[in-house]
Amino acid sequence: MPTTSAAPSPAAPIRETVRVELGDRSYDILIGTGLLDDPAAWTGLPKAQTAMIVTNTTVGPLYAARLQAALAPHYARVLTVELPDGEAFKDAATLERIYDALLGATCDRRTVLFALGGGVIGDMTGFAAACYMRGVPFVQVPTTLLSQVDSSVGGKTAINHPLGKNMIGAFYQPVRVICDLDTLDTLPERELSAGLAEVIKYGPIADAEFLAWIEANVERLRARDKAALAQAVKRSCEIKAQVVGCDERESGLRAILNFGHTFGHAIEAGLGYGEWLHGEAVGCGMVMAADLSARLGLMPAEFVARVRLLCERAGLPVVGPALGAERYLQLMQIDKKSEGGEIRFVVIDRLGSARMQGAPEAMVREVLAAHCSAG
Image (tube, rainbow, N blue to C red; front, side, top):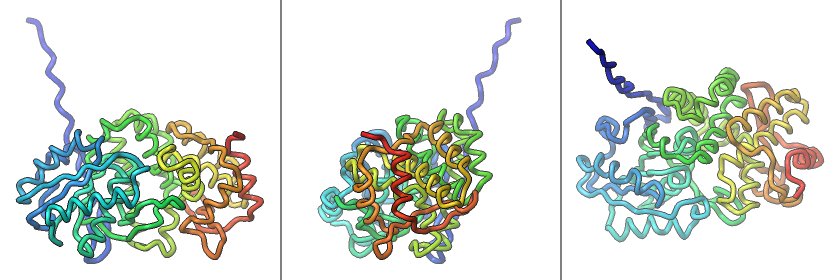
């Protein structure tokens, strides 16, 4: 008798939770598959008549209807405002569109905002929530790898200014973060690589074993293996939650999360926001920051090569644009970590440990010359 093979059983849902401990403002990060359609993910949120989903023209058509359906049992009105997509729109003019929608719909101070999208949407929705009627609750529903491992966690919200990235904002915590790994299926390859930059950074600054795990699993991550992604998102969120719990407002320890960002923010601002993705700029910036760490005598040269190779394997650029040293230095002077006119960098002093410090300008120029295009 002929036999037929049984259809493969569907993979069991992935469910992980990471807690951000901030006293009465503590909250959970839910990580898993199928969360958008899981009623349990949406229970226990603040009660209100109205929920407003803030999304963009790329993510909205993919997921807004499903989020509306998930929220409909909990809110009498579920509204949606759709913003243009991209870092170039992370500005005051676009932020006003959220306020216009809230006021136009007569939303009260109990209204709950839901940020459905990547880092730009999360930052802008959080900032709008912090300011509207002096503060309304909001939930992060990140749909990019970068936002799931970094920007949705910790309450840093902001918009850009032409003179500097994230210079206008507020610390304002979400009430929950819901990371549905299935939304990464629709993420463009370039965006996935950009998110891997923020995963990679956690290794050098906080966990040498995690760095080795990323090196062993970077191909699985790029192939969107759900188990690998769940591990990467969970460990990244654990590290960030621990740091945020110790230093919510970046008065000290939290600054280490900006490894590669001083150089990276200069790249973003110098090219014009959106030319390079944030994660691409951070990846290149980490190579520069690793080199600076070596030139300061803190790390061996092999560490620089290790960071560079991993970033290349993740699909990230490792050569900076030809802005010119003077322009780089000018832009880095505006960085939030600068103090008294001194540019301060996150450097690695041993694998899994980072600190903030300045560096001689001549040394910074050497780093730029070594890692930037000649034009």
